[in-house]
Image (cartoon, rainbow, N blue to C red; front, side, top):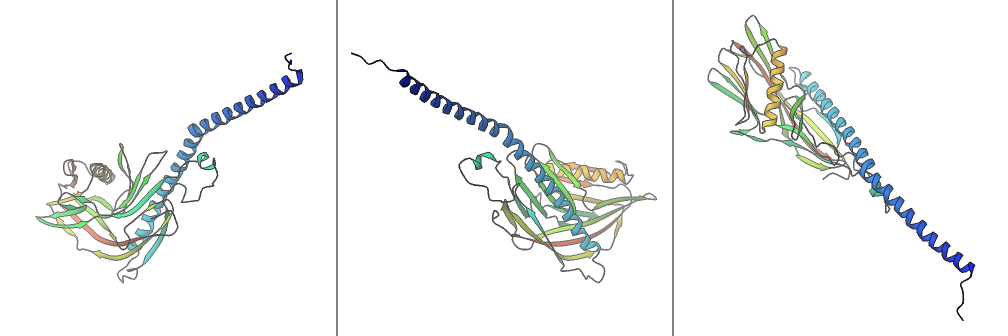
Length: 311
């Protein structure tokens, strides 16, 4: 005779089934929560971190420019500041190389930190390296233009490049172009039908380790090697040319120099500034008698890792 299940057995079976269903529902809710978190929250948090870090880098380069300028401005005829070195530290990544918490889920619950690299660069340009050439009455002089450049590899925000060149701070973004955050050290002045152009040629030279990449902080040592003042040049046949490595960089220089010319009250006919896109040359071609007042400032820049996360 078959035994009929009693109510107690059925109740235990129902309880077991309820526990299984409840467990599956909990797993489903956890999965949905993690999916939403990873799809919306983590990218938003990562984007905010990277935006804040790029703002920090922008401010760092601006302060670097101010500090570097103070050395040659206060140099004086006694050359007391020659050989003077100032040091700065720059965090390369958005999370600064900080150690993340372990466990099964914790690495998945926070954004991936961005990385970056900083280096002293001397890029190739048409006929040599990036440089400025000053042509006066058929005679030419030229000076190389190195740069201190930071490039980031962002995961959630637009990758950006900041660099310091000839006393200016430039921002370069892919598919957008290059703009100057702080103008380079070239100024125009018009007086009684004459044009004066004041140029401070900043030469950034590798003084040790040239480049470091990673996430953690890096120390940048900058030594004022020399400041040389030259006798002014004056002639009606003057042309100044900037040879750049990249068309976007050349366009950034071209726009900046045109803005400087407008601020000085000069017109396009008095002082044409042109861009040769094929060979990336920006030319200043004054049509009036022009005086060139120029100096060179040479900095030796070396880099050193001060924590793990950089290499």
